[in-house]
Image 1 (cartoon, rainbow, N blue to C red):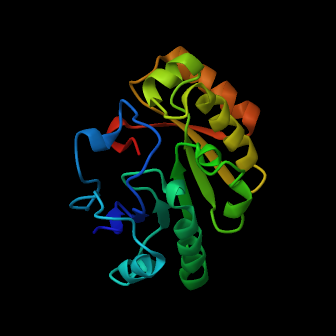
Image 2: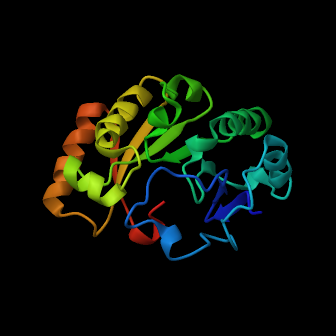
Length: 202
């Protein structure tokens, strides 16, 4: 199983293939690899000791950032995520980023943002569109119509605990006017707005 893989100058951590969304632009619909990985489809979810062992195959000091992002929603594997992030901080003190759909609070039926305090430096949340109806069409969340508001609420809560909160859309998937509206949403939350390339849509 590929648990840790390289993308440019960062190391990515692939903890789960579970995700409550089926986004229309998701890379895993068309490929099984990202960066220098061979296949991000997991036989099963790794336990912490396997994550620890996977990091042993890399000289972590040579990488700029550790990113929790694979072929699933990382917060689905929250206990291993937290344990792994603490291990990374304690061992190498590297910047840690969490790429997420922002539905972790719905997944766990509680506010998980305090759990990320002190171990996650940046959270990157998929905003996707400023329009709730369009969001539901694009993201196709199993949580239904509550998803858009829950994602925005998650972002607001993250600003209390995480130094850098980023919200993203994928270039070419929305109009320039919608991008302006997304920027306004991010400004109201206190998040940075980023338009990410389609080929790097995770």
